[in-house]
Amino acid sequence: MKTIKLYGLLLLFSIIGVISSCKKDKSAELTSNLEETTLDRSKWTVTASSEQLTGDNTGLATAILDGNVNTIWHSNYTGGQTPYPHWLLIDMKKQNVITQVNLTARQNNVKGFTKFKLEGSTDGTTFTSFGEFTFNPALITEQSFAITPARNVRFIKLTASDKAATQTGSITFLAEFNIRGLQERVPITDVALDKTGWTATASSEVNFPGDETNLAAFIVDPISAKSPTATSTPSFWQADYDVFHPYPHWIIVDMKKANLLTYIGLNAHTDAKQGFSKFKIEGSVDGTTYANLGDERNFNPATINEQKFAVSPSSAIRYIKITLLEGTPYPCLANFEAYVKL
Image 1 (cartoon, rainbow, N blue to C red):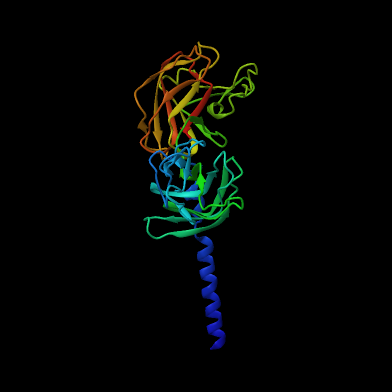
Image 2 (tube, helix red, strand yellow):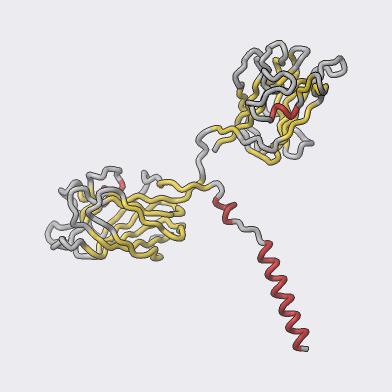
């Protein structure tokens, strides 16, 4: 019976191990669209254990958020100095995943604080310690202090505990307080996707080995690629031009995964007589059901440079279908690009 029980326990642990190893690590997935950046302070507020209301380049706690290293927060000394410890409490107005605190010392006085601790809170009442740190009040450039691991908080509290050895009183001061954290990546520009692995199929293509080869696949090769049968010309797709292949012609690009596109880019053949003038764009998730991505478009076969056309699919799509509606008897397309915001 002991042997059976032992075997059963080993089997149970093995199953648990397999289940654990099969669990998807979501950490990369959760942060894939996040970037570390200096957080916007424009709506933040700050309070302090004390502040000097007159003189000393403002002396107010708000000086640490004004972007000016020549204004400072200064602990109170009017009518008597407020003793250590001194604290600053910043309310970011919403929770942020913070990774780093950056402090800038007063620019014209080296007698500030040297030791401090950082704490964070979601409600402004219950605080969690992020550790104790050493600050150099004689260094006028920004000093960085990592928060490890990153913490999701709304309030940050700095408590200065020790003063510089040359400081005879109990005052302290600080010029700037910045925080870096993880935020959702803000789309800033349209970037062409990497086409490696993409494929293209068409209603027809010119494929006469040893004579003329203009395949659908050529629109997703590198734009620098040359035609295998006309090496002075960029590679291009050409619909078969015999009488059995009249307009409309179509070509489908499989990007292999879904993308939320903003534009597509098309390059014409270098010979304007081998082009088309009107087309439509459709998109699909599964390669079976296609939806129009806007009105019919005009294309200029005499323009060699890339022509970009805005698209706004309601969700990410994997397949793009270009249907040529009007043009010359020799419809061609040299290159295809797909753009997203990054």
